[in-house]
Length: 283
Ligand code: SF4
Image (cartoon, rainbow, N blue to C red; front, side):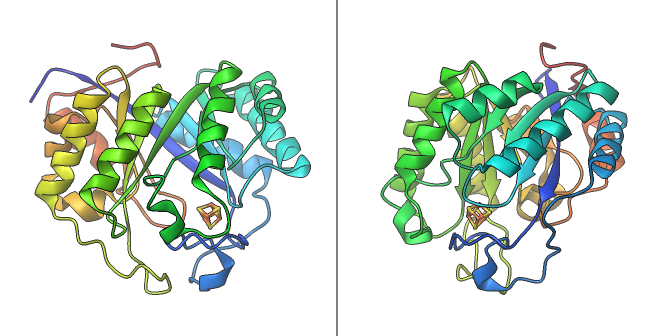
């Protein structure tokens, strides 16, 4: 196992479900009636409590995620309020916002409220995207990534593997990520749900590890975060993602699916002799 530092990030779904978009991989689309929890906004107190817990679980990143295509005025106000409240209570958490398509002005407001990074995934290649979403286009996603960068926010971007895309699509998405050069790359593995139009993830573990390896090779300066689908895809072979090049994971639950218990992941990292980062600049 290479000697390295692993960065832990936690996610809070601060506005869940009932999205009008038709992304065929997403249980938060109202169209597919998936059996998930839906709420307009989580209380600020609950968000702060989750942030405190995330830090206790040694996360250094905390991501405020909202369902929906993009930013609205009320959503922006809410995310900023949540960011200020979390920063006040847990100042050493690096805050990430993930609120869909957003303008340069939105990004500036987020930054002012204490957000350091913006997460917006390309999800797949430009040419495959219309097959998994018809209500908005890929170029809008790419532009949002550029908007984040132009305001000096750190960009976190990536995608989902295993939605029926070809290997050329995967290479194409990684090439687009390379153009964007994000600080952090979020690699997700599609998690099937019976309500969704995409029924299966046909990827096997070897191909998935190869995708992590290839992404790291192409984007050596970026942090490689294995996010959604990690537990389901790698099972007992999770240690191999770190050998393949991952140096960050999401700890705790995901947006609508459960993750490992945080102490289980921490034990695994310690047993592998991997160091858990104390802050974002840790090496
Ligand atoms: S826009 Fe976001 S929340 Fe809405 S369906 Fe697509 S991925 Fe899900």
